[in-house]
Length: 535
View 1 (cartoon, rainbow, N blue to C red):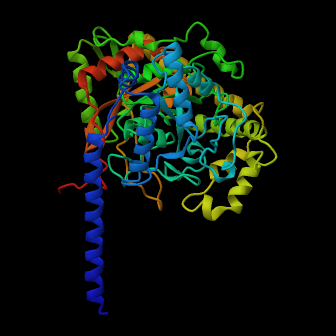
View 2 (cartoon, helix red, strand yellow):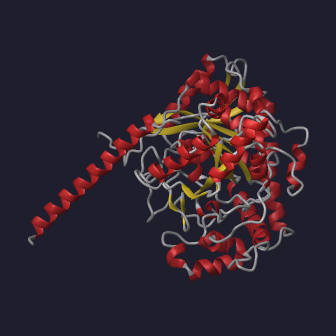
């Protein structure tokens, strides 16, 4: 066959495949509009079950079918790493209980997806996306899972994540794991969801479930929430327990809600909060945690609120800045007092101390978690994990390496002077000289900034192309941070962030809800194979 004929046929084949992809995306978009639970909230599902129009079983069945149609077929978002084989049985039991005794609360019978680094004592595995833990079935639920079950939730399944919560390599491709593969952004399938709570972000945005739970050390809830057009709450460290969650850092780790509305995030946050004897950090939340954060949902909550614009986190992308500027103008029109600009000291000084703390704590905390695993596990320490990855490099390291694991393994105990010095610097720069100082100086209710970058193209040879974001200061401080959809740039979601001092969730929820109701910026994804731009 002549070369020109071969090229012609290849071009025709590529065009046909492109058309097939576009047709599939169009069919998916059409089916999304007709999906019976499209954009359904917790309140919508609760009303449907209360009226008898739906049962928990029928809702669970619809979400499972949606996972088959959208996640495992169709556009193949690939966000759910494992479905709970007992989900329908749990839903059936909750339906009987509702009939016999009434509902436990707003989450009774409502399905939830949780990130695959959160322990569940059931038939599902908890792997952090790693093949090394591919057979790990915990013997006890994480505390927050106990709380979700007590609230009447149906644990629908586990979501994919950036492997080891994106602490394996500094040159990683987010949303990829050895066990789960690559999760794709439902707004444009060739783009990343950001990480590490990538699967939860994509799944909730794509209507695979009503609500989801992610975890964050620095940006891992708020960044994928922003990239997927969601509300994400990274709470104060200590408000939600970390026991039974595969760790990175005991000073920064926390689970948190990822939902399509602020109301649902508030409901989910209250359900998970509580003091846990297995997590000493939660003792500080006694008397500060709130069982029902929905009491702070006030559509007029921007009136009189003093909001500081943290300009140090602008400038990475003009389109993002433009969207956030529109959001600031909307807040001003709604009665907010905008303090602009507000400068947080030490913005360029925190990074080195943070990574030093994370390396030390990752080694200590992960060693403690892995040491509890049974004899069937191939790894019981960070050193074992490094050796496992090296022995299974073709499956575990086809795109990026494990230099962060190696660097962490070189660190000593938490009594080292280097660790204590770095931790003291983190607390001083992020708290006393950082957020606390700025909030006090300007009498602020919250700081605001762009949450993070526009979703970037998935690119294995060079890794992530993320630039910008404001997650570091609240993450290092252990302070709450909420992102809310603010609009779109190049058809991709842009989030705006609100953060403040410890246990300021009530005021942040009030501000975030008022912003959401004022702007109503979220639009559901259309599962486009890629985006085209006119030059």
